[in-house]
Amino acid sequence: MCKAVAYLQGVSVCASVTTLVAISVDRFLAICYPMTWQITSRGCHFIIGAIWTFSITLTLPWMVYFRLIQIGRTTKNDNLYVCREIWPTESMGVTYFIVANLILCYLLPLFIILLCYGFIWLKVWRRKLPGEGIHNNGIKVGDPYPENSMEEFIIQVFAPVAQWLGASNSCINPVLYAFFNAKLRAGFKAVLFGKKPCCSTNGGNMVQMSSRKTTSARCPTGNLSKKGSAKENAI
Image (cartoon, rainbow, N blue to C red; front, side):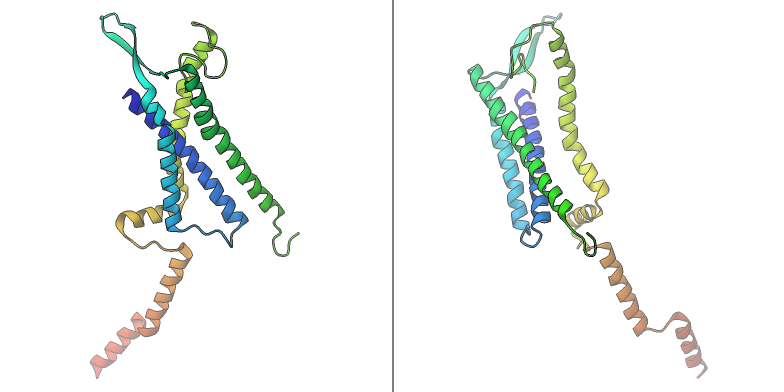
């Protein structure tokens, strides 16, 4: 569980961040290059596979170097263990943290997202409408903090809150998308139950209206049919 929990946490956070990057790039291409950018089903599958492959591979060291360490005994003479990230050398751990966590999972995604949405903002702003003008025993960056210090207390208090925020971001995205996007709900139901999703609500109404007009043109109204049947009975 020590290895699995740490590894799955890293995979989920990395996949969530990479998905946000993919969404921002897709929106940038769709808005800035609407006539040339069209994502296909095959391309979508490739992007999803690349996201998960990157996330699973990048966090593999956590599966290897997280382990249980005995730190003492409880009052009942039971061994007390904690789950810690133990690298062969301290420099390897710091290098992995800086390259994998800080750069690849934070700074680079943040830069790409800001760049894409910056170009989107410029495109929309210039558009003219027609007719209108992880915590550890020591801190990764900086000197180790002394025991029983205020800094240690703050980290112990806020580290679970930071982990909760990272997990809540991954959990709330599906709820928001399903609650605010009717097309996503229709498409999800179509995938589960094998139904053909309608292109849009207006399109469905137009189809229903056209079918009603066709039916009314072929068949007389209820009153006329009753009158016709009454005349036939009289004859």
